Length: 127
Image (cartoon, rainbow, N blue to C red; front, side, top):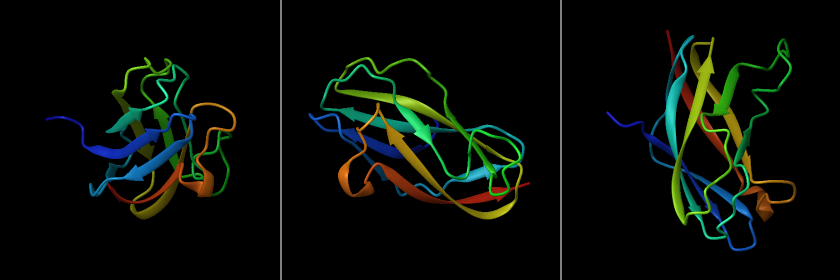
């Protein structure tokens, strides 16, 4: 079974990034890396690296609001193709309903105006 599409990324010709969540309701399994697809529409044909960050997954362990680990499976730059798919890996040690914000960019200053490069998701975290 294919990984579900969780987010669609649009990179406009000026390399501004916009993230849109899909209708998929994400479920995370405690202690396991869960895989989700990100569809990238690359109108800029950029070959920069797509990056993801989250306030709920700060780089320093032990931060009190940290409950999420997130990273892209492919750390390589985008290919420059008009359309491609990347895999997002998410992991938690929590259970219950948790809200997270994911922020995407392809380099300094490429976030879309109006904070459209970030997407808020409600996760169901199960044991």
